[in-house]
Image (cartoon, rainbow, N blue to C red; front, side, top):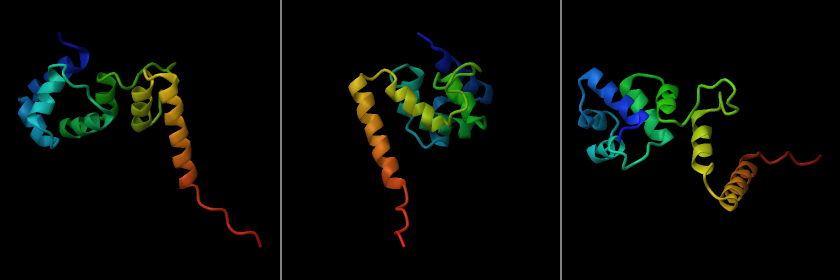
Length: 122
């Protein structure tokens, strides 16, 4: 069964005269990883999309769109968010509410740690 991303990726490789092994070398991944993506045995992450984009010399957003990570719908409330934020949303959207709440609590804690301490009162 072909999906949109694997059909698109295979066409990109064919257009360049590349084999999956060629892409694997260019993105410093194993050939097995690329074959698993093409054969629907492995999903593609935002980070992998970035690496593929660099190798293909096309935009990260194009690869992420083809992978279904981001939308081009102007009414999509996530449109314009950075790819890393969209990847986080994608990872969490099908998780149970308890996992989403725990992830939100962790992000808030990390942001609190990242805030500089206020200057001491005079």
